[in-house]
Length: 267
Ligand code: MG
Ligand code: MG
Picture 1 (spheres, rainbow, N blue to C red):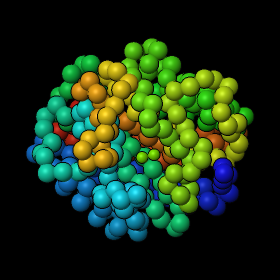
Picture 2 (picture 1 turned 90 degrees about the vertical axis):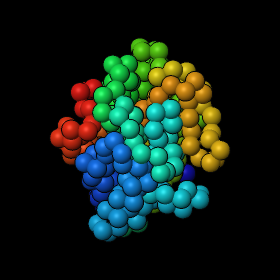
Picture 3 (picture 1 turned 180 degrees about the vertical axis):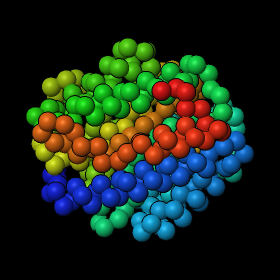
Picture 4 (picture 1 turned 135 degrees about the vertical axis):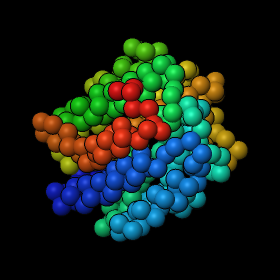
């Protein structure tokens, strides 16, 4: 069942999304070598609750944390832990907020300290592919148009691996609603989108091959070849002429540039 949202609902989803974005902007201030991902998670949970939200992911199907924090070869769904972040790490942080009955969902990948030019390209191209997908979130287009745009930019153009096991999704009252929004596929296929469809578009892109495996924790998804991966996500509302991006990277990017421990030179 695909739920199209009313303007009031879209407004509420936007509020949840903007708290997600504000939380990720806090993370952009907080990240530096020596900080553990568990400390990041604790800070993010406190920030969300102080601002009237509830972490969407905590206890979702048993997930025990506020954030998914996935470092280097971890692609998504990483468990925050006691390992200090170190210079050269690529840290993907995925956050969801539930507020006023609606979820918001967004993710961002950070470069801690100096990373290789190859890794910088991976981050830049993955972020670019997100916006290439977002551009297609217009009424009358099909979900496959988004999928194709992401895959074309990452796999065809740069030879990166597009994760097949995990996909974007509709969201609203539930964190995961129909339709699924893959990052791979054919143009002109899948659901024909109408105004009011709210979807999370989230390219998960591997520097190497597309193959993945699950960690012993049952959640963390890692690249089989051990190479790094990147993950950027926006919640987007389909509209007539132009997609409405409900989450925002503006403050995240400003804080990323202002934080001397992060490398923002990739974009
Ligand atoms: Mg997410
Ligand atoms: Mg998502």
